[in-house]
Image (cartoon, rainbow, N blue to C red; front, side):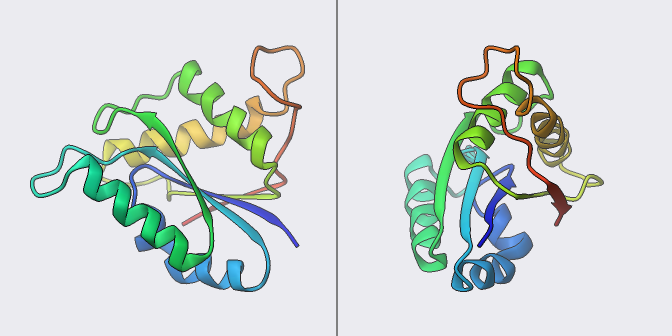
Length: 144
């Protein structure tokens, strides 16, 4: 079975973008982990607590793990610190496959997260770096 990471800019992006696929992969016995790059707040009608509760419930229903990276919503930028933080999570979860948002999108967070996720894939394999964990190179990247 494969180890799979699904990177999302905000909690709910993975479920909205490929929730059925996530459920199927988990039901087939693959290890699936969702990484939320931001907490998704502020929004007009939400809260950090509501988002956290809902994303935890969704992960439980889907049978997957979930991690919040903690970048600032609406201010995600492609930079070394963000790349290395995500690369460290790739080293922890050691995915064979990474799913990332489709690179052409109206939301700037989505575009930035895709770039970060792509470059973190490269960074995760580097040996002479301060990124924690053992180097790892995910074999495939798939856009949702």
